[in-house]
Image (tube, rainbow, N blue to C red; front, side, top):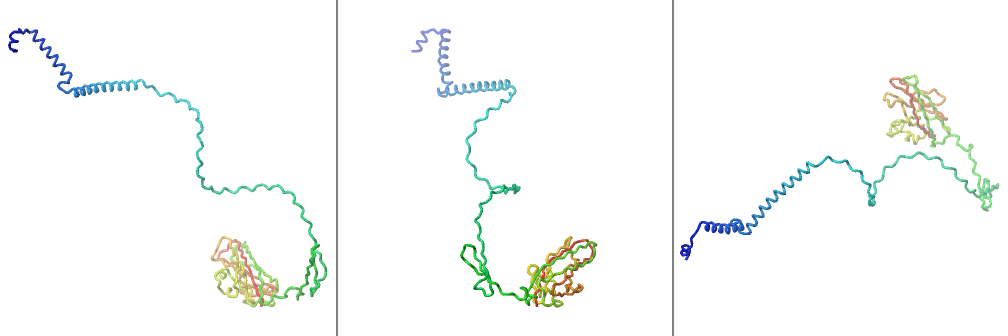
Amino acid sequence: MFGAVWRRVSVSPGWVLAVVALVFAATGGAYAADGGGRSPAAAKTLVAKKTSVRGSGVASASAASKKKKKAVLRGPRGPRGLRGATGAAGPQGPAGPQGPAGAAGAKGETGSAGASGSDGVAGASGRSVVVHDGAARCAEGGITVEVEGSGEAHEVCNGESAEGGGFAPTLPKGSSETGVWSSEIENENARVESNELLSISFPVRLASPVAEGHAVFVTKEEQANKSGTGYAHCEGSVEEPKAKEGYLCVYQGHTEIEGGANPTVVYGVVGITRPGETPKFDTFTTGTAGAVLLLHYEEEEGNELEHEMTGSWAVTGA
């Protein structure tokens, strides 16, 4: 059938071009619509991507342009503004824990004396004591005393008369009496050795002098060790002097040598004699009223130093 049509229709060049143009127009439009053979969805995605890429490029270029404009337009930093007004005080916070006690402060100065107080109220008048001679119930006589207005009488009797004026004429056997002594030596001429005499008195006389060798000097070392020749008969100390019956015990107490301890120094009591005799070394006895102590100081080299010694003593009657 088409062959008959083609034979009847005369084809001119213009008509051919018109047909080609019509076909191209139809097929080209379809190609553009579906993205060159892609599905409509794929074509839309491709178009969106191209638009996004083109848009981001434009945005990036715009941002870069703005940054460049800002960098170019920024000026120097302006002066600091004025300080703003102080804000209102905030609410008080909770109390913190109690801190540790502080160290004691220094003692303050003594305050001035206070004003004198007012006089107190006068006390009631005291009552006199009435004394009456005689006491009915006292064999040796006496007196009767009574507080005025009390109505209560009290008898005071006389005591028995003492023989010998109230004191024993001599220290009774086995009874003791004690005392203290002190010595100071000033070695002004820097002598190598020096002596000093000092006396002790017995408040109550002895019935007889202490026998030779029964007057003893007890050193501090013997007191501390509770031993030695002297300590055998003098078992006391400078604080509590004691003596056996018939002995005089002289105890060494505080001893000071100016300049400190010196091992070459000899210092102590080297003799005890009767008051009526010449003091001698290695003599140890007493009189009935007291004794004289001979203290000796000695060193290898003379020094102008002061030396002092104190002590106590005890004697017991025989």
